[in-house]
Length: 105
Image 1 (cartoon, rainbow, N blue to C red):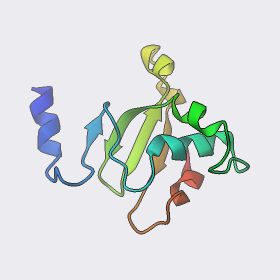
Image 2: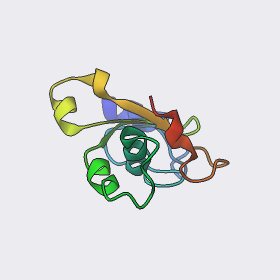
Image 3: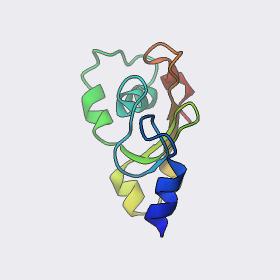
Image 4: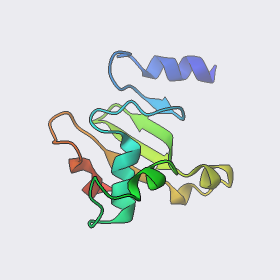
């Protein structure tokens, strides 16, 4: 029943669509990279050696096709039910890559 309800939400399978868990369908760059830059702060450049390690720490919690918005969480926080540790970022097709990372909440 849940699976059919979730599939019904995704009326545009060729677009990003709505997702709970799984892998993000990014509009621009890998979403995990945008979150990593937001977590590491404004001094983190695309060449920062910490980016890959930090990006690997995040999994998709949910994605909505309204822009597209993403909620990510570290697996340990997900397993412990610490949803207050989730972060939010968004991407839009009209923004340059990386422009969404300053909107990390």
